[in-house]
Image (cartoon, rainbow, N blue to C red):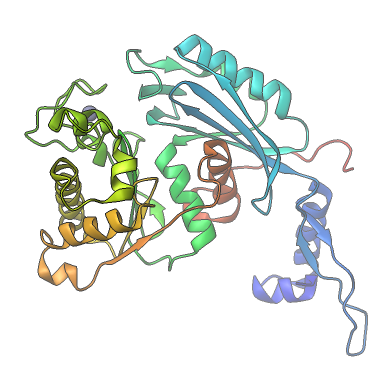
Length: 360
Ligand SMILES: [Zn+2]
């Protein structure tokens, strides 16, 4: 929209809106589009978000690796995805710093960093992560040091996925939403209350994966047995039925009615989800991840879950599937933390760094 339209929309005097637009143009966040024919008076020059000059950077700490990717201010990946192997705390810090040296420059606006597990952004620490199962808390001070003046938004990976969901699907802000990621040995959830991620006493996912059942699973990296994400795994499935060596995703895709071990996994997952819905009463339950992508399995799961819901809620909660494009690139998703922070008040606008010395 033009400066004049902008000033009307945000109820600012045209001069003030013009000054604001000027600052964002100088920063490379906005650019001027081709002038529209006017109906008398000066031609209107529309302003638009510039997807070419500035970018945000996504960093994702995942089991076995740290991934990084630049993403434009319109959410398009810029450049190739980049992954470095990392299997212990020192390697995670070193790999993240290497990514920063290569990809962060004076056109980088913000850095979104996601970690599977719990983080403490104030103390700049990873507290507990499936990426570092036997590690005590890890200080990320060297990462912040490498980022220099660039703000680093440290968050849980499910919150990053929720940021991407909010920004690309655009649910009504007033809705409460539970977003659940269902994979092989990996179950997580994020809870959005009125569009804001639920903060709790520690920044992590809403740990649906560590909701526990009386099931004899292997010990989880959290230290317990019976965690839902240990139940929802190929390992547990094979333990139930030693004759069938196929993995969870392959069996969920086939969805053979005679696969009783798969049914056990499915019913535990359905019960876990039903308990969450009964407890939270969300407007919407969004299912994502490789298990949810198996359509027949997802339908059976929804049916199993409905059986355990309060009937009143079963009629009201919307259950939907979401298959984000390129969801396999966690760094791209981490970059959405930065985009959500730029564009959504609910996601905690961060102070932007100063404009680069040369605007081009
Ligand atoms: Zn656990």
